[in-house]
Length: 452
Image (cartoon, rainbow, N blue to C red; front, side, top):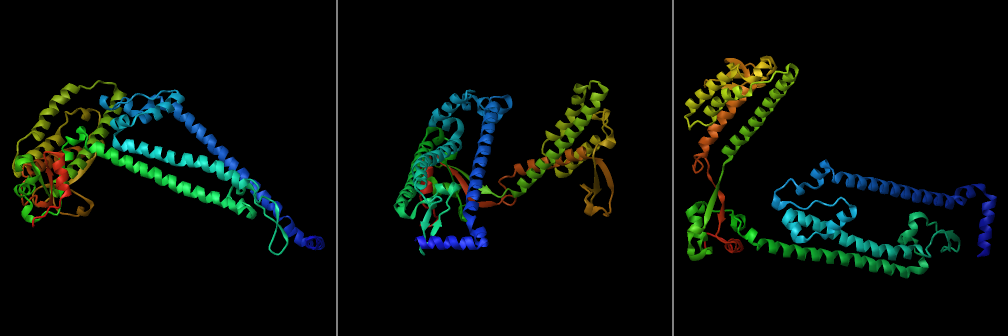
């Protein structure tokens, strides 16, 4: 053993290149390990500083007027039955209040979604905090104490080699000395403990979820709701897509086969009506946007002049015209088009409205209209630039009001024909409401079929 060491020293003395290449390697490794340790401590210090700053900002913000709206909206922005007590400003009392809240109070005030989210956060804490306490106190001392470190060891060829395990690596299991491999049993036991504890906590949370779900479904507040007694039936054959046929099929689930206790809604395809409603909603948003734009211009001009507007007089002039359009009876298409057209013409020529006093007509957005072959004015687009026909420009607000009125009349006409078979064909699904929750669950549990 001594001879080998002497030869190695002679070689290193006689060859400066080997000393340069290999003699300083352990020092470089130690320097890199030191840099890693310092970088870790620096990152840890920065993270703790940011954490302290965020916690301080949170405590200062949560009790302010803005922070109360963000962090405590249910203390004053909801109904009285859903309000909760304000969180104390004292950090100690605040944390005590958070952990002292009862599950039933949390479900009542926040609902099941909020309750299970808080339950999820609790489950995460219950899984990882005990594991951290056990693993840190058991594995870290076991890995560090009498580990490899920077000690020499005898290699397989008989030479002495330095381990060079330094920095954070001394806390990992690669620092365990090969002469003490029985310490790996601690890692195996801890791994089994982690898996077992995690599965146990998941099992407990699953049991709690089933229990809370059962209590909620059987509670009087939920059991008496219409949604708790209603089921959705799909893939209905064409011969059963009627109220009478479905009542005859499901009346066995109510007392004395009383069909009056069943309520059936056969779904229909309301795509045409839905598209009209969507289009009207979009036009109403555009109309509101344009009116707000004019209001801002009026307000800006008014602040410069300082003259008080006569609001009462303007409202009296505008009210009859709006009522005549919106509250009219069902009209034929041609008659409705004439009324709306005359209303648009009157709106274009109207100069007694308040905003005309402050805003010039050139400052108001206009749209180009094109008279079609059916003698109706349509919006002119880029693709109709060279189209033949009479053209005109009207205020955008007047055109939007007319379009909203036209769509409203068409929607009201379709609403009176919701049971029309050709306009709204029946779909292969239906909602059925029973008189009891048990009857709805029985209907869901059994297989419904039109043939025995």
